[in-house]
Length: 470
Image (cartoon, rainbow, N blue to C red):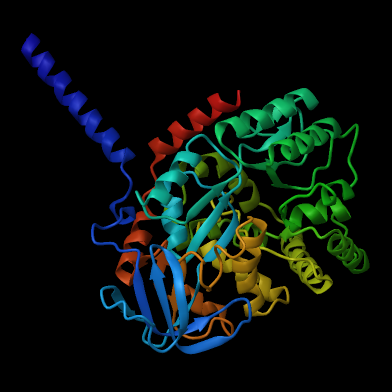
């Protein structure tokens, strides 16, 4: 009897161990191959330089150890016969895309981004696992976009926009302590939310400046009893001010007056503030309303994290039953406002808010670029927003988002001319990330990996996060 019981227990333990190992394993499509090289010669390409927008036929690029060593026309000088040669077959080679506003909960999110040509992301809501995951990617342990992350989202206790994933503070002393804690943990970028008090906001700014940390976030509205003027966010020195929706909410009180809209755009331009519109996430909300929820089950949602979905389901039910057209009208206004920002000279970045509110990674980045074109940018200007502007606000100008000597070999290969038609970006032939060449078959493997998020891993990480911010 005892032997039978022990045998059953051993089988259960073995099964549980196998389950845990399986649930924790990164999808095989994200693992680099043994023969992956980081030095190549790419030939017979049309080179798209986002700085000038010029297309250079018969282009070649020499990549050494993940960096661009040379670019030009014709044969690469100096031979390099020992390097793997890649024939681009007349396709367009350009820098990979930068998405400055995503939410990464699992490695599958990164697979989805890279499969769509996103080679750098900024995660805007850090958890303990993000920093070691970023290091693992840079060491080449797994394939994924370069991962930059803010610390945990900072907001005030009792604020109307507070939630359980934010690090909530009460006043200046706690705010300073939170910034120091995030810095000690290894974070160098801060994400600020809407309802920080005047005292907390000032303390965070001062402590961030003292520690050399950057800040981004929503317009900080203050508290109901002590609201902050909108200009306070323009004067805070944010890397990016997030969400056209939030700017319209606080800068215009959702008033769709076109003259006031243009006046606000000019005020933002004068301040030099960079806006990250994230138009796609509100578009998805509007589509849920318009389709009575059918938008939630579209094919792109296959890899959407099931744990995130469990948190959002009540919201989905509310918007699926919503019987008004104000979300559609507001979306049109947010697009018009983004166009006004562009006309006023405000620099724009590409951020998708992927990972939340039915915005899948990768495809949402491309859709955000398309909406920027709807707002009045040219396809080239949308590409520049997703390359040069993203690199600049992340403090990596000349390192990423570029096609010049010294730039990271984060590249994408597409058919046709995306400066005339952004739809070309949906049909990638290949991606190079840190010098590793991922052909169409490898991208298909990444797409498959993107459909395999781990609920167990996500729950574990959320638990770790809760302990870290308490």
